[in-house]
Amino acid sequence: LVKSEDFSVEEIDQILSLSQNIIENPSKYSRVCEGKLLATLFYEPSTRTRLSFESAMCRLGGSVVGFSEPNSSSVSKGESLGDTIRTVSCYADAIVMRHPVAGSAEEATKYTEVPFINAGDGGNQHPTQTLTDLLTIKSLKGSLENHTIGLCGDLKNGRTVHSLVKSMSRYKGIKFIFISPDELKMPKYIKDAIQEQGHAYYETDNLDEVIGSLDILYMTRVQRERFENQEQYEKLKNYYILNKSKMQNAREDMLVMHPLPRVNEIATEVDDDKRAVYFQQAKFGMYVRMALIVKLLEVM
Ligand code: NCD
View (cartoon, rainbow, N blue to C red):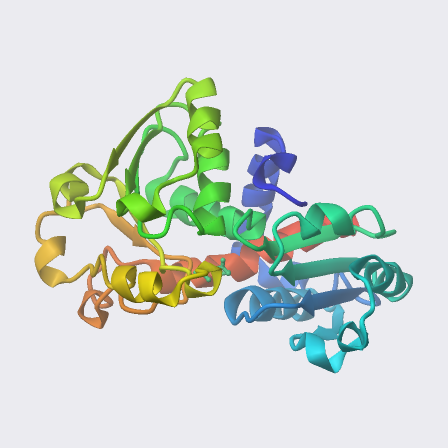
């Protein structure tokens, strides 16, 4: 799984249904991965993605090896990505990798002998966050069709929004509203892809103008680590701050989502609003990763 389009709509449906089943009957799945080993190779920082994968594998009865600090592995001695992946696929039954270079996940699949999962490659894609987001939307909104989705923040560098838009554009009745400063607009190749699917999109830098029309507001962090110019980051980092007063103009049933980590873009005063679902979303992330592991290891 390198990009969010790698699974068909039917396969995504299966994974979401399996996730729902795991949520309802966790004990049925608690030993299905006994004797299986998952490797998590994290060349970039992570809290939710790595720990939710590791929790997912443990809750399925499997085990986990890996690193979260590449300097503690032979990467620091100059080992190539290909050699690392070849070696780890001798040990583990599946590999999860996060890497700062866009395209590195595709590269890694040339060397792996076992199922490979992209946990984020630079500013490119983050398909398991998208599975998380789809499960959240389906569970809380009932359907993946007929939604107006506002994506707000760093749409240029945010891999979660690239994967989510590509994936959501395969469902009926989706309208995208891209809310960002000029410097952080959604890349053209993503906009072209949604137009090809026959969807409309609208771009603005004004959150207040559109918040009242949204079914879902997907907030994102300005991706400091992708900026070459730190001054520009400082200028843009607090461009949007969602607070209680802005939420007053939103619909009663709008969902506020965020892949997390949050920096300043959502004020903590919003956390108690019933429409703020980002911590629930993180929990859905563990269940959807359990379903993904079950599918890729073909244990059921
Ligand atoms: C995201 C990521 O790593 O792209 N985090 C996550 O996996 N939930 C979002 C981010 O870092 O802003």
